[in-house]
Image 1 (cartoon, one colour):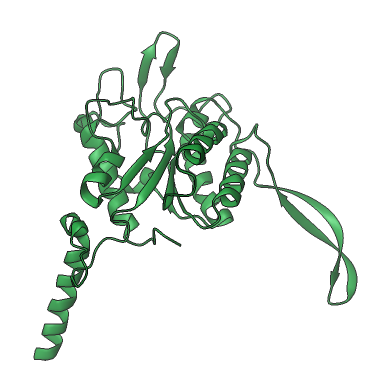
Image 2: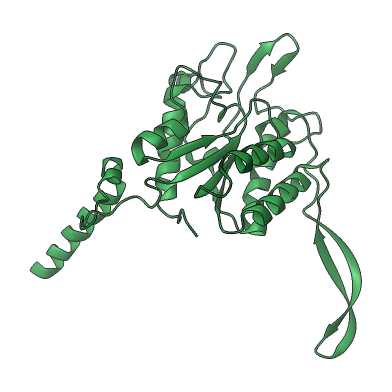
Length: 274
């Protein structure tokens, strides 16, 4: 019984060590502390306004908190307003500035595709072909990935196909959009809350689900911030995490900290270097 108690205590202490961000620096040779698998990594961040370094200039972004807690070097390429079809410019800048000298890529996109009313589309096209199956030429259905850039799923397929070819050995992590509430940035830029569908009749969760499905299709992990971050700007009681007023869309520094905490713990389950 005594041995079982000692073993349990040791296990709890080890787990606590993993969860302590301050131990990210305790990685010197011979140190028995267990460190976070992403400690000290170089990570490229692709995305929209929530990632853009020029938005929330005087406060810390989620990637800034990850830098503080884990020593992650952030290469930030997010651009306000960008949709999935605009990721290629961010990818090109990353390649031009850092080549292959980084460990992983995080992609935080999708909310602007929803707002722009981009149709969801299909993952695949399908046709009938003749194929050799066990020595017999038979007719079977065959599917092929859709690269229709006029659809959300076509954009996801095109971007992930390019990333998988450009960086076949890099860890790629998808982040889903968070919940959306009312925002007004000008008289001609008014965005209703997520209880309203967009111009093509889709709700925001259809875009979230597509990103989660892309995880399986392309074998890239996804962190579901829509479900796991706890951010729900539809309630004014969450004013602590958003600027409020005319902007219930972008998290403030406290909201970014909450996003970063969610990412921190989810990354414990993922290798940074493949």
